[in-house]
Length: 149
Image (cartoon, rainbow, N blue to C red):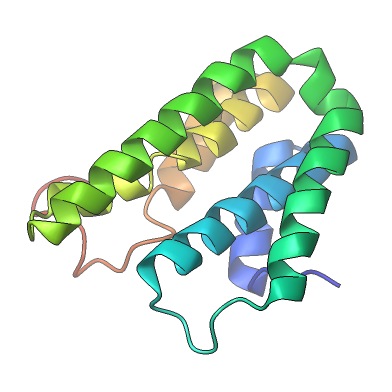
C-alpha cells in the first residue's frame, strides 16, 4: 500500500499514461524526495522512522536499478535527478533567507514527472498533464504572485 496521498498518486499516475514501470519509478522518486526533505526540514510530526528511511533508500536502489522504464531512459533522468537535488539544495538556502523563490525551486523535481509524461505520451500529452497539475505540491498562497496565473 502506498503512503503517497491519493490526490498525489492520481497525478503521478496521470504522468505515466498507463505505463506501470513508469508509475513505479515515479512513486519511488516521489517517496524518496519527500522523505529526504522531511529529514532535513524536520517539519513533519512524527519524523520519518529508521524503518521508513531504510525502506525508502532500499526501494530507491532496487526499484531504480531494475526498473525497465528508468533503464530505457536513464540518461535523460540522471541529469533531471541531479538538477532536482541541486534546485532543492538552493531552495533550502533561499528559504532560510525567507525568499519566496525557494518554494518554486523546491518543487523543481516535478520536472521528472512532466518529462515522464512526455516520454509516455508525447508533447501534447505532457502539456495537458502539466497544465492541469503544475501546482500540485503548493497551495496557491505559496505560489509567488503571477507565476501560474
